[in-house]
Length: 369
Image 1: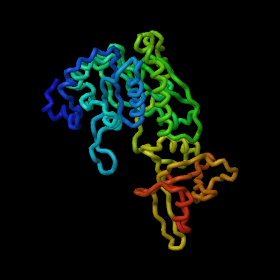
Image 2: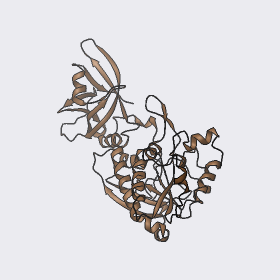
Image 3: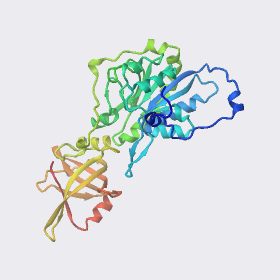
Image 4: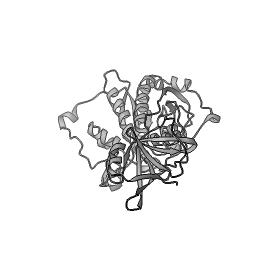
């Protein structure tokens, strides 16, 4: 292991945070060796912190089969508008819980030799990953004796990749779920230990669905941990059918624009899928007929639904109307989208009525991409 004076190690190991000191009498106390399995958790965002919370709570029970021996997460980064460098949500949650700071690892890449050396020294028997965000190399996967198990928020082999929940919602699926699978080098392709299905309505958004699926995944993991520890899980785990695999690639900012030439159901699915980040944006023309002036407006669509009225007709002037608290925008194939909440750049989210009243008689027209 490197000496504590190494600046890079101080960053990766969070030695900048205070750690508890122990008296000489406490240090002299002899503690019998633990028979609990050593588990290392890997995760980064807030949904991962909820999984860590479940594991820490379970590990503190008197009859627990395991202890959380270490945590691996993304390095501190600039978050929020101030760009203040902050620990990942998982690291912050662990610190708030009093988890030893020197057992929180934050390598830029999981292939770093210094990290792998420290990780090996933990003698981990099982690793659990939940939205960690880094590729795990073969060297890493060979270290835990019982393997690495991933909580993946889809019904594998469907939606392998970085954005399974978002891509499923974008496709308008009515059923999804969460899978526990052993991690292999191929992307989300390892044998499946267990899965749980979940029906979803056409209103739920990605952040809410992510929370629900990781909560279900945490409970499923606790149910399956005994079989993982005794080795029976590796025997019963079923290989994935690669011929049925679909991919869920990372979302880009460029995908956030709405094109009203598409059907309303497609756009509504996109609003739900991209909620949180990157959001969905539309270009709208604001027309002042009194002054005969117009200006382009970028509008973030927060909440929507498909309009089911019988009065949708194609219009040449692309006018946006307001009915019963919603903006109504005509879309492809004689469909229409209701917009219930919007956000202007740098402003707070407002309902459609407040936005419409703020126009003071000016008209809206949709712009085509």
